[in-house]
Image 1 (cartoon, rainbow, N blue to C red):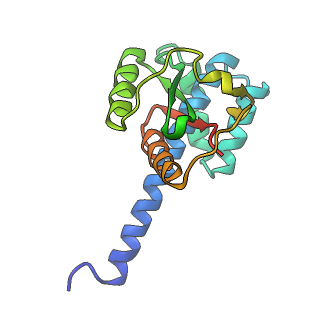
Image 2: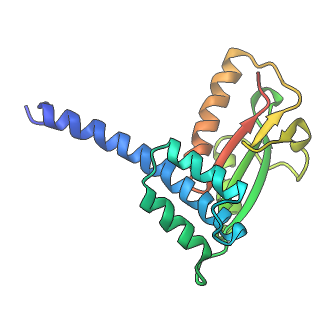
Image 3: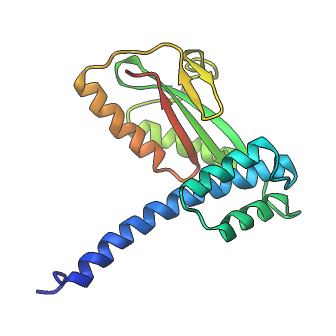
Length: 176
């Protein structure tokens, strides 16, 4: 029986683990490039230093970190914009999506499409952010909303699908 030997099993598991690592490292590289651009390559500034520490915790190689820093300060680097999208999920919980993109229009249309597939729609600016407080790690909820087990399961599926999108850096909710 093909596909049932030890090497095939290891190859599948390693492939899945490598894909997850690649996804996380790609998102971190984008964030490092943006912070590097803001800091003009100065790794001693707190914003860039904290992202680099996060990358090191995720075991991102030093040469990948250095490439991301160099990409941020190069002359022909694409301008990456940080965008915040807001929506309401099952049970009336607020969802805030942080994205980092080189094309605002493309990302906006893709987010609208993704949310419509999930049965959601973009909310107007500030309509969901009132329930959150901006922190160094992202957003923390000021108020929370209790959810039924069905709504909670639906919300987890929605958040996983949104987080799987390449430009999304973080997804936050005020559900309990």
